[in-house]
Image (cartoon, rainbow, N blue to C red; front, side):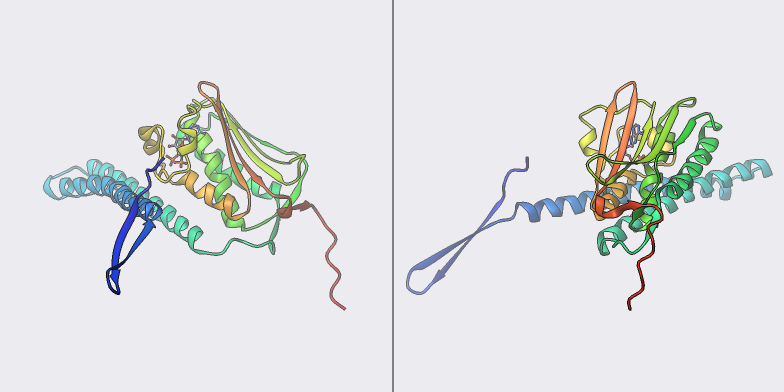
Length: 274
Ligand code: ADP
């Protein structure tokens, strides 16, 4: 818990009258510290690939390299610039999420369509980083429609699935699906047979740049912003993000959306106004 910080100001007025103004500046200071930390984190995250890139450029300029060696360096440079691009795109997405009004309920889309899209991307990622060795399965439950921003929902869903792929060792099992909740609303869930996450880390996972295993995150192209993006998208849709994890067994991440954003498929169109 952050200790309280109080600002005191003594004003004199009239003949010997004094006025003591007290103001609780805890939240102002906290916001300041968070902003400073964020800028330091972003700078660090950008500097790392930049340092590697400039090292490669120097090597290319200073040494007489064979065509194969040049190509190898260029490919590595390409990787680093892609990494910076992903980071900048995630940062822009986060700031858009923070600075725009929450999506309404004008756009409805079938849950299974979003799921198919995301699962296909998950399989491509597994092909890329684990020779497709994960068993990735979409759970086709009852279908229904969801209201919100398609881009945001796809981004949140695919962040959870790609994390499952990235953190689950080759050969692991990953399941994902949408289902209706008995209390109303609907839930997207992704479960994996990965390493699991110790309980002490769970509450901090949605903080920007918080990573349990920094090197695993970097190796697989993580920016440390994925779950922060998921949390924002879920909150903007009036929902909740739940995380259950058992070390050594795996994790389940759930996005729960409220009943106001869920309806059965093929509702008859509203009659036009007379
Ligand atoms: P990153 O880009 O590092 O994956 P995220 O915000 O998506 O950033 O996730 C934050 C951290 O949460 C990750 O670095 C990782 O330590 C942990 N994590 C997320 N998903 C999983 C998962 N399915 N299994 C194990 N750890 C996970």
